[in-house]
Image 1: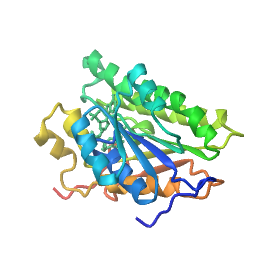
Image 2: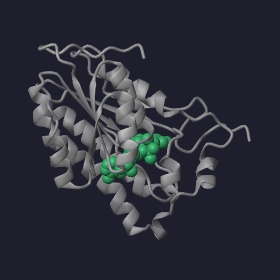
Image 3: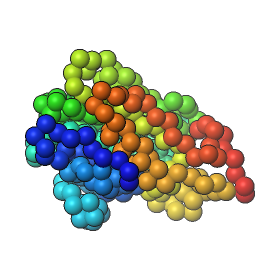
Image 4: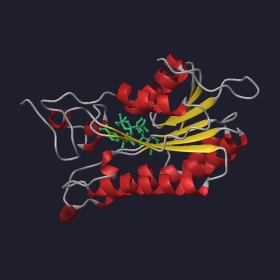
Length: 254
Ligand code: NAP
C-alpha cells in the first residue's frame, strides 16, 4: 500500500479504530491502515474472526457491539488515544418490499448502521479532538444516495448516514477533525450472505456476470482519504465497480 500516515506531534504512531473489522471492508481497512503506519484497534462481535485479523495487522481486537451503548463506551474507554475512527460496522437484512417489511430486520439495520454510528462517534469525539488531527470516516453506501425496490430498510438507514456525515461536518467546523464518507457500490464480502440469512447461492446471484469490487478496493479509498495532509478534507467518495452505473443498473455478461 503506497500510503503513509501523517506524523503525530509526539512521534508516536497514530491510532485508528475500525468497527466491523472481523470481515469484509472493515478487515481490509484495518490491514490497509496498519500498512500505512497506524496502530489499529479492531472492534466487532465475532471475536475469533476479529482476533485473526488483529494478529495479521499487529493490532488489538476488542469485543464491540456498536448498537449497545455499554459496549461502545467500554470500547472507547480502552483506546489509548485516537486519531482515526472508521465507522464501518453495519449491513443489510432482507429485501422485502415495504408492504412485507420485517420489524426485526429494520430495527437491526437502524441500530447498527445509524444508532451505532452515533454512539461510536459521540464516544470517540473527545479523543479525536484531543489528538489535534482527528478524522471520522463513515462507510455509507450508494444505497444512501439512491433507492431500490425492497431496499427501504437499508436505504433509509444509509440515507441517515449521509445526513449524519453532513451534520457532523458543519458541527465540527473550526475543530481539528476531518469528516469523510465513503459510499461503495457492489462489494463482494459477507454482505449479501448476511442479507439473505446465510443463503450463499442467492448471495452469489448479486454479483452474477460482473466483476464486483473487493474489500481491498474500498479499504484503498479509505486509506487514501485518511493519509492526505491534515488540512485536506475528502468529503465524499462514491466508489462502484465499472460494471455498475447505479443501485439498479449493472452491465452483466450472463
Ligand atoms: P460484511 O463482510 O458482512 O462485514 C460487516 C461487518 O460489520 C462485520 O465485521 C460485522 O462483524 C460488523 N457488524 C455488523 N453489525 C455489528 C454490530 N452491531 N456491532 C459491531 N460490528 C457489527 O460486509 P461489508 O461489505 O464488509 O460491510 C461493511 C460496511 O460496508 C457496512 O456498513 C455495509 O453496509 C457497507 N457497504 C457494503 C457494501 C457491499 O456491497 N458489500 C456496499 C455498500 C456499503 P460481527 O458480525 O463480527 O459483529
